[in-house]
Image (cartoon, rainbow, N blue to C red; front, side, top):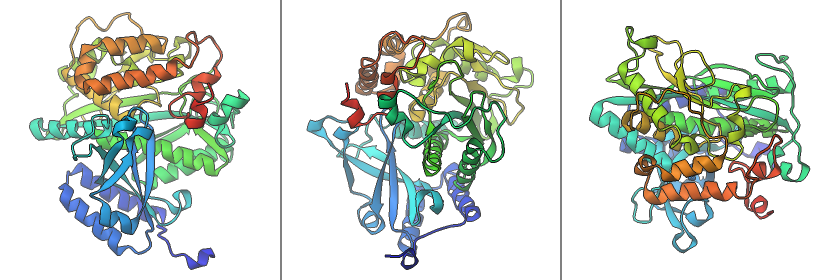
Length: 473
């Protein structure tokens, strides 16, 4: 069959941006779910050029899983989608494997056809028990429900902007091959803000930026980062549940673009010894009735008392929540103070070694920046934990001191398991499941990291490993 015989949906980038921004606006305005559902299903039924709908959900560790449903089947069966949860790490056991998948029609995206293929759209799903109740290990749904409750009960909107760093490697599937080759090649040796317009790193950045703009990210700036072949593409803040979706879409876009360019986009926190690692600095603020509640022109650093209390609560529980923010063996390599690592449990407007930074801001932009988050963290779990901690956690006014974050995952797992506060944030079963899957990966890696990157910490990294790699032990 020739391509001329196919007539699948392909939308120009400027039109994609308009469509995706309009859908995002519906989410921000909290248009009723049944209204959005009816609109989306009517669109899918009427648009003959769509062949499939990609439905996404995430597991306990934050991996993105995708299922392509034939459009006609989805329209008939959207209220009865099921999948095998026992095949998802951290989800159900084999003896209780079936789970349901509900469609979150508001989280709907039109895709650039040249990157994702023609005739497809994407939507996020929500994992449910067989009886239709929320599945406890679906942290996306937990974050969504928590922020919706805050808005309904207190008029609070939680805003987030993530700054996600990554590396670009030569060749496809470079991380998976690392277990055999023991090496990864950078595509560029240029540094901060410095890359020739036509070199592979800049070509990748330009292409990825075009895609995320078309998908409604509202781009701000993009550039090479400090380490060679490292990148960061920044976009505007938005409501927390949308921001968390955008973290996973950002990584999906980067990986897909890199793959098409015969490269690999990696979000390992520290793939190389001797150069900076990658972080996911998370800028956070709270609006109450549309006004930035973190801003006070007369407060210290122009931050309100609510903002300072939010910071001190996070610092108080820093050890307890460290595993949430730094969820892999490799992420503890990044917490090395020799490479601008934010491992100090303190807040500062200028010291970038602090766990929390207070950027310059005004009535619109006043915020805090949590810097100790690795780019491989589950964004739903991390953002949910930070807001709940900042608003509800214990507060020690002396928490802004000389303590430092753990330098290994074992100490972080211990603090996480022993924390009654963290246990109260999560279902007890989910609390233990999360610790168990992290320990399972850690036990396959050397207890003492040393200075060189070990095969095991890449091979069993939750964003890299698969059934085949997991069996090579």
